[in-house]
Length: 283
Ligand SMILES: Nc1ncnc2c1ncn2[C@@H]1O[C@H](COP(=O)(O)OP(=O)(O)OP(=O)(O)O)[C@@H](O)[C@H]1O
Ligand SMILES: [Mg+2]
Figure (cartoon, rainbow, N blue to C red):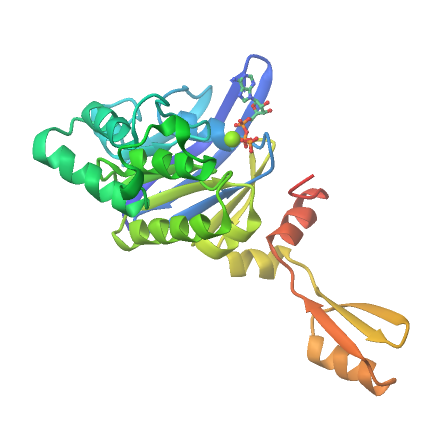
């Protein structure tokens, strides 16, 4: 397989504060890798190291085997930063032209890429409007469009759905899925387990700068998810049973006296995080 990102035993400190503590992972071509962790886990720090903005205290990061500060590595990376990086006084199109030129695009090629990413991010109709008048979700989409301009092999998306409504969120997922289908690699930092679960081929669970687990969602659920929870109502009584064999346990409850209703809560990534750390993903 084509290894796009390599992170080996990465350590980083802000002064005395440890932000990354021996983190290792890889991103392959055609893969969406989730970086799931709570506030302060080190997600944005990892992304800053991958762009070459910060240098490791120890360990190694590489983009297609190259140091992130080389021109080749930079050309291969598209970044949608957590803090929006846009000019409020420029229109969407002017922002894209500006950032496209920084990426070395010129002339008809630049114009064609600007048109394409406006379309892909659903902003064509607002292309001539100043960003200052955009909603939070529209700014987010434009922030992502900037990352796509030069058709990079690797996308670093840092909480790309922050402040985006559910409908735009779906459009954004489709956009990420299209990138995957084109064979690009996507590193997707989020603290929403729903989107990690829905979108990502593998998920790296991070906390306090450490990698706690990295696998496909079904494997994470199977290994760290624990039992499902069966909740049944019988008259005024609520029965809660942790179960690894829900049908059998349901039949047993039903045999002991007819149930009025039941729900089954399968373990999710929240449960995985809870079992790995003893804490909730979201406070
Ligand atoms: N510029 C900075 N100076 C000092 N400490 C920092 C700085 N940026 C981040 N940190 C600290 O480093 C740790 C990791 O922060 P980071 O921003 O990488 O986390 P994150 O997972 O991206 O969190 P969030 O979900 O809130 O974006 C935190 O303890 C944070 O307080
Ligand atoms: Mg962050």
